[in-house]
Length: 196
Image 1: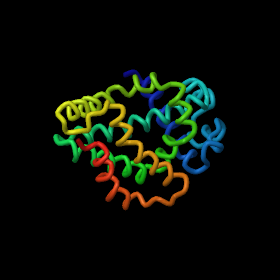
Image 2: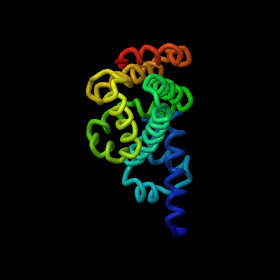
Image 3: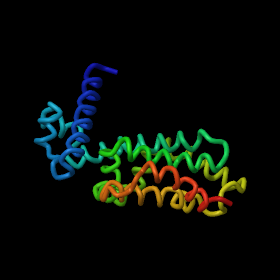
């Protein structure tokens, strides 16, 4: 990698780190190009060069953290040979991510992320293929072996992640969900919904 490419990567990382800090402190409204350039020390021209516009910055930031979350979920699931421990690990891992990375979780559950998901679902899925495919193969294999309910894999995914995402959103918006208590009870409840 050339020095110019290395500097470009450092610039991108500085902008994304500053963007998450601003988002955590100020929300979407506080994330402006001028605030971003002040916080990151990167010029306006560099922001536009690397990201195109502010929407590009937020999209890149969401993609970065979605990749991180999917990587953790994939690792948690595929680390288990048996269905129940794998499903329960996914639930706990997701809740732990929300607890330990609240700013990133808030971004991933934001209206911006919802709009991006609707507008660019196929592209986002293609970009995350390396993280999603191992989970789908694991689910397919366990379903085919009779270790999971005989429903299409997307339905199983919805049964596993739907309740977790709903709790995460409620925690992030209202703050009235104890994630540690949820992590003790929810894995078993989710498992029951997909057990054979």
